Length: 109
Ligand SMILES: [Zn+2]
Image 1 (cartoon, rainbow, N blue to C red):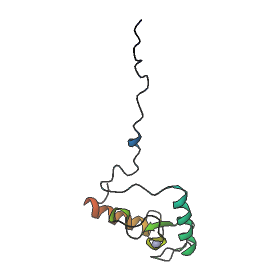
Image 2 (tube, rainbow, N blue to C red):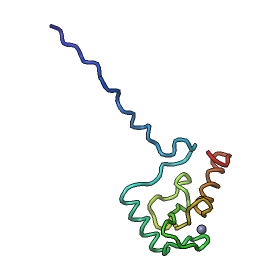
Image 3 (cartoon, rainbow, N blue to C red):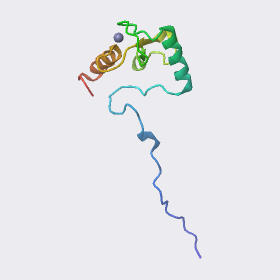
Image 4 (cartoon, rainbow, N blue to C red):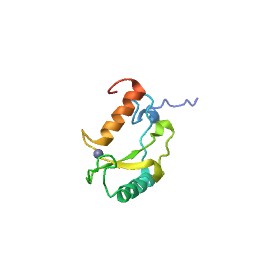
């Protein structure tokens, strides 16, 4: 009897398919993990949860990379991070929308 290789029953997972910002041309993946969460928390404490642009204090304020990662900004250095307010009209939302527009030439995308 001749042995034959079994056909694989499962198609291999494409591990590249989960790219967070795939749809945004040129954008970098988001920073994740425990190192990020630690630095992020330290930045929020340093800034006392105060938006460094408009002064709004909110618990859900966001931590922004002053120099974006796509422009070579350091992902985890406190010096490149600041607290900005989130939400639809937030300073962070506005800043990332402007960066996105500069990158793609479009308002959204
Ligand atoms: Zn703000």
